[in-house]
Image 1 (cartoon, rainbow, N blue to C red):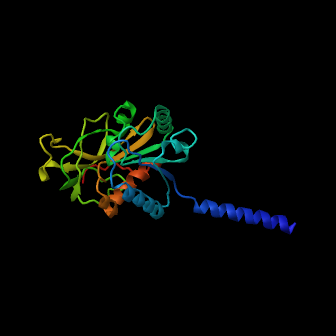
Image 2 (tube, rainbow, N blue to C red):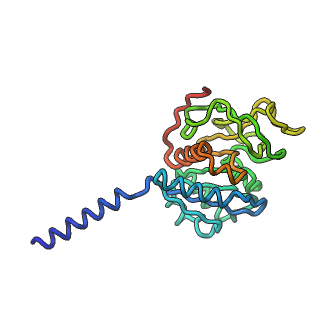
Amino acid sequence: MKRPLLIFAASVLALAGACAQAAQFKVLVFSRTAGWHHDAIPAGVAALQELGKLHDFTVFWTEDPNRAFNDAELPKYQAVVFLLTSGDVLDPQQQAAFERYIRAGGGFVGVHSAADTEYGWPWYTRLVGHMFDHHPAIQSAVLKVEDTGFPGMERFAPRNLVTEEWYAFKPASGKLHYLLTVDESTYQPGPQGMGAFHPVSWYHHFNNGRAFYTGLGHLPATYADPVFRHHLYGGIYWAATGRGASNKGSP
């Protein structure tokens, strides 16, 4: 009787060890470009992989939509990150699978040119919240915190001097919770700025899922900034789990 008991005990211990080592969630990182290709993609992928090690979540990166955008693969992930995507990156079948994923409670994270992606897909426009319109030259400007009660906002000062390619966006496609804005009086937005309220980052619940977007992330060096990394992780954490947002409002 001792041998079966030993085998059973070893199996239980192995299962317990596997459970103890399981990552807290899984994230799909998608960086396909069919328009502008950002040089920052490798730095972004590396930063996300390092965040996965730091915060114990699994990262799978691909630029091939055939590997992930279907009903068999997408449910394996709690959040999907569109990292510096551009243009038309999914075919109609892949789009439909992604819509089903969000409606089943999945999470979306858009980084920078994720807002310059899939203009012809109205559902995606509503998911992102604002679509890209234009931008001036890369400049330093003052980034302002609008909401301190969201994960990843803890390390921002109320006002932050940041160098970025400041996107101007088309009007919002729905009700959004804004996290960051840029003060247009602190840089040269050109003749068509957005005015007194120029959003940079936001989140919302959409179609039973969760969507977070940040306009930061154009420059490769940005992905080495610990404040930006923490902001990015906060969006991933919320999109994957739905936890952490307290809506405390402005500082």
